[in-house]
Image (tube, rainbow, N blue to C red; front, side, top):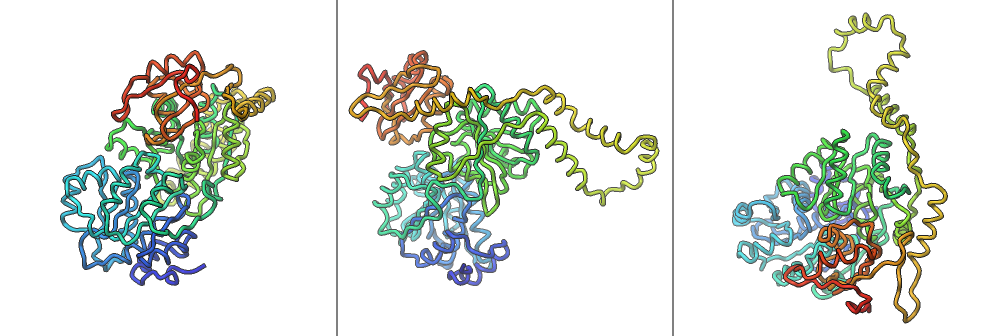
Length: 558
């Protein structure tokens, strides 16, 4: 493996990254840096999050920028405020300390006036979220005429968030760029279209298998009935006393419900979702980053751009509909060479989707037994004993209390002292789990899973209309709606949208089939009218939504 010096990184930058502990380039850095240092070659890099992409484009940018020219020469576009700030901070850390090089971050949710003042003072590189950058362009507060290098980071995330038109607008407003660098975990057709339109014979590399999770992530699942989801979540948390992770839920209502229930029971957690103000979000993320809270409960939309080191577990309270979403979720752990665990709580209806994830990831998702109450208590007990044995007693003046302690415990055996300590620490656990139920699937439930699996994956007869069925629920009704991927939706965000609009539970839905302009939704017949009444005729981004029964002539599937 080549060193950073052998890749062409200059001495000043080498000194800075050595201070940060960078010793050997990661695979994406080793392949990307020599190409990007040319400064004239368009580039596509496909790699999972946590593989070192920021340094892969950041070091060449810092080396190519002309320090004497204090106007924006490099533009980095990313999907969220958190990622924007992280990239700007990383570039500040990478740069040669002797260079007077300025990096400015511009993003929504904070004062645009201050950001305009920062830009007027002069800057060499701008890191921006699409919405705020367009706002600055329209106010003529930023001049992109002299931008030479444009980086699109987390391009697939920006597409999923509906920023395709914004990205194209920004690229049209950087007419003198010498090269465009696109980094993404996946390559959906829409991004491929953007690359063909705005890039010239890009040099493309793929690190690992597209859509594949990191090799150091252990994928696990726990099979249970739907009504046991919350209890299984608690067992997973309690069975991993050192856990530091993110729990993904589908809707903001789910995140609030899970967070409220766990908080009432004494867990160190908080939630982020779309209803939080930027100030509230920043506060929660600050607590999570400094590990004042153990777990973050989040929706996919709210969690975009979160990049926190040291996450041990990602927990899917429910499986997402898209494998790409699963990949992004699991990619929050197992970063920078560390190992991580991606856990899914799966019901019989979801088993077929788990198999699809395995096929596309080309990775085994290991079935785990839901821990028994005794398993949890035993794990917690030994974790406490280990912490007690590792406690630092060198700093306090504990010896001054020893005479009193010896007197108090003089007539008590050591075994009894240990029992009393354990009773104080574990009384709540022991009482809660004393008669804990077995939450694992019984054999008859697993037979139901296999039947559900076969029904769900049944292929349609050629030339015929497909009828879907769900285990135990009979036939689904199919609804047509004139919304699709062109409206900025992907399956997970579309599901969240229709559930929030209709105030229905996910359990009444079956498969969602999305096209560019239209979608078809399977729903239990008892809930179909309620969804149509809640959504049909409403407006989305200035367009009237049309929803009706697909079988009664509403929409024909192509």
